[in-house]
Image (cartoon, rainbow, N blue to C red; front, side, top):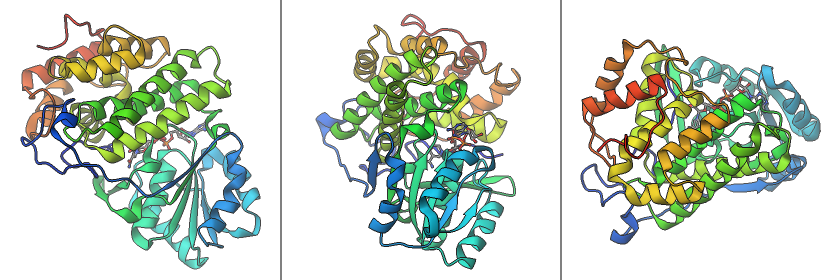
Length: 389
Ligand code: NAD
């Protein structure tokens, strides 16, 4: 089974320096040593009620024949957008599935071709966005994405696909959507448990950007804003799940976190989640939620400046335990055991995570990673004293 498409610094579609592992400047200190930055060419329309502008956005692209992508278990927002599109919508496909199976993409491609569509409008989470990107990768068709979760995929030029149980990941400018409409009304109904893990997924992109080997001042700014937006949203989410200010905060954080993922290479945390999702079939966003505080604790001694900035953005004295407490208070999962991972799998996961070296603030040791995974399996709260020296 495939994992998420989020990758480490080694394979990320970075627009940054492209340094090889080992050539990096000190993580968290890259700006002092120079950096490279390339902006991504997409258009963002953000705000309440902005989904009503979908027709104007299709016309702005000079398109007139839309294939609408939605999903069967999220029909209502799809219906809403279909109604707004009116005669511009020439076909609708509701079959998007997790991990972007190639067989589903081929089915959607038939609809695209049969109806001579010149634009895809996708309403949904990372899975629906993935299908849209898969169509664009094959045809170059223009994309307008209306996200309903906080995955952040809509602003990255990366696509992960599965066929015959194998996952491949690729990156190209054609994959990056032309336009993203972030309307808070679309994610306002995202159930709290999914919202929490989805938001922590976005938080992880921001955290790892701050100690990325390709860190730069622009991405640092996005990351810090994402961390405070997501923390503010998560702190209020359980008590005020329908509050649009809370949801806006999370959505803005998701966009900023997605930008971080798109712009600089990720590290240990994303690698671990990739292994756990890919080889052990653990759920994408929940795995990010359990692992993040422990990956941070592992890296804390080697990235003190990044951790201090993260702690400041969170308003807590210590970043790894602050993230753990944030997740716990929001009701998110805190144990790999609870996600269904067998304790016997930890050794194999540690082997896989340390098999190929990649940029990370702290060098990976098998014993260190096994200890990290064991803590995550039990759900031990990291503390400054337990951060791995
Ligand atoms: P998803 O799209 O599968 O959605 C998760 C669940 O939430 C689904 O059951 C969906 O129907 C439901 N849902 C979505 N929006 C809802 C809403 N507003 N209200 C109620 N239910 C709703 O998953 P996701 O977490 O959004 O995305 C994860 C996928 O995205 C993974 O496959 C991951 O690999 C991919 N991803 C890719 C990138 C990239 O850059 N390529 C980045 C992040 C994530």
